Image (tube, helix red, strand yellow):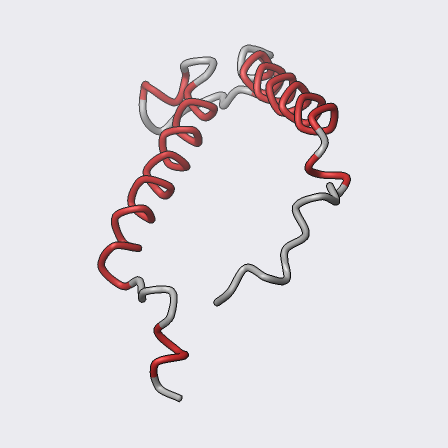
Length: 92
């Protein structure tokens, strides 16, 4: 694909530095809030199936680790199943 249709002079609302910084701050705040919520007794399991589930931040750490696995596995999977950029133009 050619990149002729990209206009680098115009920035969208999501490309602005203020939006990116605000979104990152909101994401960090939500992550910290979720980790702290793990210590609230009302939201903890009364009888965890495994001992590790009783830790306050177990589910936040588990979710982060699972997300990182998906991202890192996807990077390597792309090397196996990815096509070069001009793959579909070669067939014409």
